[in-house]
Length: 488
Ligand code: BES
Ligand code: MN
Ligand code: ZN
Image 1 (cartoon, rainbow, N blue to C red):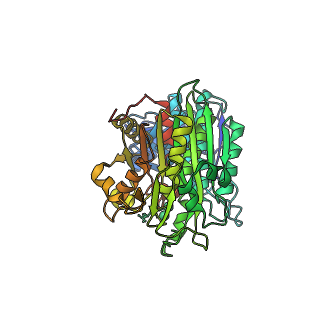
Image 2 (cartoon, helix red, strand yellow):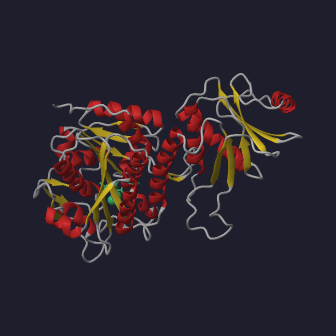
Image 3 (spheres, helix red, strand yellow):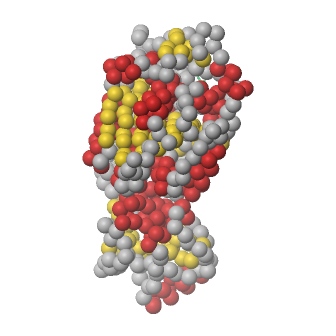
């Protein structure tokens, strides 16, 4: 398991003098009821340390009787991101203890708050340790026993949060995996394995894609020794409604192709499948949670390599939609993969909406830094729902413009379009390119180049693969309202 956390749920306080985890409200009051002597000792030590229970603050008291970890909640503790953040703080505080082991006695909290604290613990405890062979790093090292008379392991809220976490962990795992292990066929196999959750998974190989005329996607993969795939994961939980479609860029490694990238930082391009990872993780979570919606996830899986068979700058390819593309830069490959994935998804499934996720442009990081995903859309309704879902899950998005003047930058002298605009507005022209492969469906494109991977840890997102998008999409689908296009 990719986790440092060994969490158990108990109905009553276990025997022994374990370290205790206690939440402290904003007025400095202890949330759990402790035995009288211990409570008095804690309160006096708290006063000495001037600990007032401010939100997210924590201290560890080494009292004579026990070690007590205090985590402040502020005056109001609500379900959702603030409860999750408290879970993250608890994990960090116990991880810092020498024994890395503690019990959280019964706290009189709303079930939803408690479930989200537990989700935060799991989010924070995630750890990709698969390739360590020393220090038994593959054993869970932080042990937390949560006492709750209401929430057992088979409580609906716990099952729901665990299924969500499983989707996040899968997306993070996929992003962490190196490209010699996670190439298109292996990614495809991991999608196929999700059929055990009730997802209907179908795979198109190169022959099947050639038959459909997917010249844009296949052109990207043709320089690689690895076979390309398009994988469809279909969740039918919503009767006969038109599905919500999620489409992901799955470039398992992006060397740039013949337009080769410079060596510095090229290793980052193992996570150029972060969009496909988010879609796959979201599908896993939705299926695990048995969400009552129809959702179809489609991922285009390729490797962008330079070799004797690779496509050349200047090549013209024909996409499945019939449009021709002059490939000026083979490093602008994600949009070529998505062109065919989007057209296939729209024509095959007639979705009520399409949302694609892609680590599409370095320019996205220039524009927004690493704080927001970029959002481009033909529907203000859809943007409003994505923004709301992003804010509440702390996976935020920020809308950028599209439109005619940008579209003009994609004009080619010999084909319907080029695959790059100029140096200006690179993320926008990339989105405009994608827009040409969406006929009349409400659609949004999320450029997650700045979000799929993080170089620093936050309380519930350890550094590395973030799983960004899984929770955003789950929330969007939970709160879903039908949308229309701005031009309809
Ligand atoms: N995968 C990259 C974009 C990227 C860069 C994602 C850095 C995450 C971090 C994409 O395929 C790419 O190479 N884009 C080019 C586009 C350019 C050739 C128009 C880029 O951003 O330089
Ligand atoms: Mn590229
Ligand atoms: Zn790429």
